[in-house]
Image 1 (cartoon, rainbow, N blue to C red):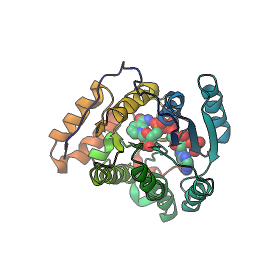
Image 2 (cartoon, rainbow, N blue to C red; image 1 turned 120 degrees about the horizontal axis):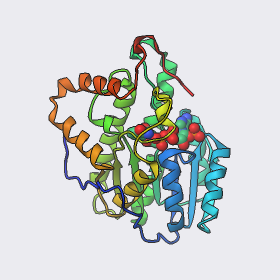
Image 3 (cartoon, protein in one colour; image 1 turned 90 degrees about the vertical axis):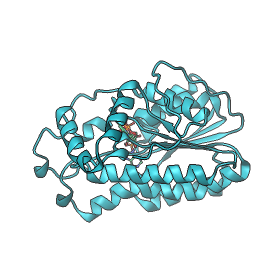
Length: 289
Ligand SMILES: NC(=O)c1ccc[n+]([C@@H]2O[C@H](COP(=O)([O-])OP(=O)(O)OC[C@H]3O[C@@H](n4cnc5c(N)ncnc54)[C@H](OP(=O)(O)O)[C@@H]3O)[C@@H](O)[C@H]2O)c1
């Protein structure tokens, strides 16, 4: 595992230290729920405009309501299905036709699926890949040049500890997070000295709706508010890498110590032990919600 030059933020009791980003605009994908929702609420008082993106408009309305209670930030609610490439292009067209300068972009939209790779359709996989990777590539291509030209802002990638190991029965998910991480780390180096900050966050188990998609009836794990605080503090400090919490940092070290060819089996056993894939995964097909 290439740990690279990482700044790792592990404390989970920190408060959000980002100073105000006057006149700046933030765009957050996956803002209706979980980590993206918490980031939107914590970030909103620091920026002038915030663009919330996900499919569920009414959930984003409630996020906006919460933001209005704490900040005067201008809020845009954009309901788009980012598993459709044409939807992401419509979002980009809206940004460009309104001459909006996005300074900080948080890429949190995502979900996982479990089940053996061989039993799902190419169509399902195209949607997964578009949501987890394709939409991010399109948004980055459209918005990154403006950030570096203005020499401010940056990107917060919400990846996963599964970027560091293949995860059987979540094969496409772990592969997509490895893709995202590799892209993020290259972009960080390519844009060095151009006035922006690029940070990748590696959540472990976090108590969000996401856990239901992988078979947990009662989501458990770290509080998404804490993950959001650590992610934002890490980004504000210019960290390359944020691993939220000691438990996740320990897992990260364990994964790094396991030989590469043992990791898939380790990940599968780890998943089964904590209640993911308790059913026979060979009988399951991906759940596209
Ligand atoms: N929770 C964990 O244990 C965990 C661990 C490691 C990494 N992560 C990563 O953290 C990120 C955030 O997940 P979370 O835990 O906060 O889960 P979450 O509460 O389920 O949030 C996922 C967000 O993605 C949005 N989304 C899903 N499908 C979408 C689509 N087709 N188009 C647009 N938006 C879509 C959802 O909004 P709508 O449903 O309204 O569209 C929601 O806002 C994900 O990228 C996930 O891979 C989570």
